[in-house]
Image (tube, rainbow, N blue to C red; front, side, top):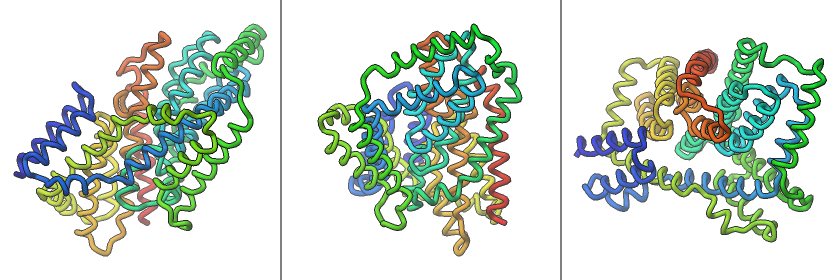
Length: 431
């Protein structure tokens, strides 16, 4: 039974990595096989699904979609473009930082869908190659997503398993995330100085930039913004995020806050929002993927394999700092080539087993190491995170081709630098 469970999971993992079929179907098939072969009972399979995680994702998907209907996110992007006045350095810094900020509170795929097309339109019109700007937005979207509970799926999974609140993530990770952002922007600026030269002394380029920004205003904001709708959206978003921050005070789980925001917005903005359209916008395939994955991991966990793995890890060293480094670098490298969601899901019971082995030791550092490694490691290659793939596809639609190696040879060294910074942070966290 142990070999059968492990075989089902490994075959599913490989198929998920290479995606010959939709990964949600693969995960659900693996889950069904776990039940059909008697590894898990139907009741155990249902109990294995972490509904808090799935409901948080569902609530945020609906909330973000309904909020986007107000046009406020597109308007904000255009305002940022206007503020830059066509200055390449200003475009780079503002769009990179706003990408990181958006990704901390929206999911990073939604963020790049909003920002990358606007960046391409602006830079191509100015006669500049937008690739380096796209690279920055990809990387900053993954960095920003690592900061909060809702920013990246690995954090949502970790939060659901551990009970860590939105504020716990921010308090534990803001220092390494700020350090990584500063490091990344510095590398971009030092290695691409000529591409960010000011156009303030070139009247022709200034005029072209002005015309482009006016064109972008008409293209990206096609409808009139309704003040009443926008005020309601901003109010609900603010209260929802406030609920995340005050989770430990008001004792309301993050998924309940997300659903309160989504339901409230649907009710008070009923004349502007088609709720059926909002339900259609939900990435149901992603949610079913999570459900199937949770069941498969529970099947593997039941065999005792993961407990044995944790004993082996603890046997290699009982020093909590070295264990954290092991988790950080392994999760970082695995996330460069495989979907980080299955890996994080597997690692959760392993870390819980380590906690049992090291009774009395505060293992919170291992969760932060897992989060940083999984989220930041996805920057290492073009297939390391969903935002990477989506951004490249958006660029390709506008005639910009970005190859796997073109991106990876630039991003891989930066990602190694990020993991080094996180390693230093973990050292001081333990000290």
